Length: 209
Image (cartoon, rainbow, N blue to C red; front, side, top):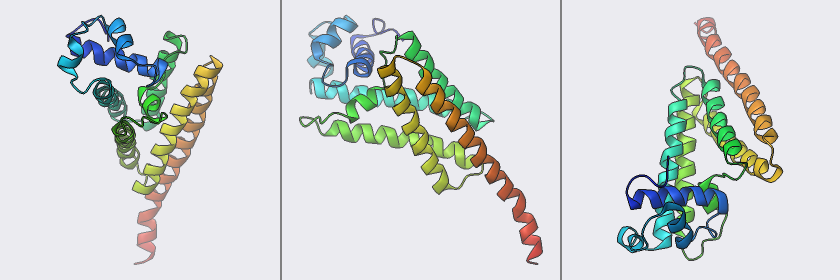
């Protein structure tokens, strides 16, 4: 996506998403968004009468939808391990293409106090919940219980987000690769156990008759 294409509102949201990931919420000012997007200054209060807080809030929603779409596309894979691998691959590409400057805009908002705009933390929490729910659907469809699926989904998201932070600090893709490998092994083990339990249920049922 190119922040200099589309209308000024779209350009500003795209720019804000990129800047949030790179500079954090406190570093994403209106002036920086205007410079990055090329949007006219008069468009700020035309499109975002609530100012910077509204712009960032809508950007959180946009980024949440965009990444949720990637997760939901991955969950359509026949092999859930491949779906999660694809999500790791997206972050691998983003980090390498940006020379380790790109981060998650949702994390950028979540980790700051935002005392002047407490709704931003709530918006970030809602995005994380949506991502987790999408992963739960994938895991439950492949035999895990809803409880185990929810725990595993939270763990996968925490591992990915934490690995991205470490990659940026170390300027190395190694933390992401390590997280991807461990998550892959964990998923394979959990799914194999779930299949084994399912296969055993008819036998146990027959024994009780």
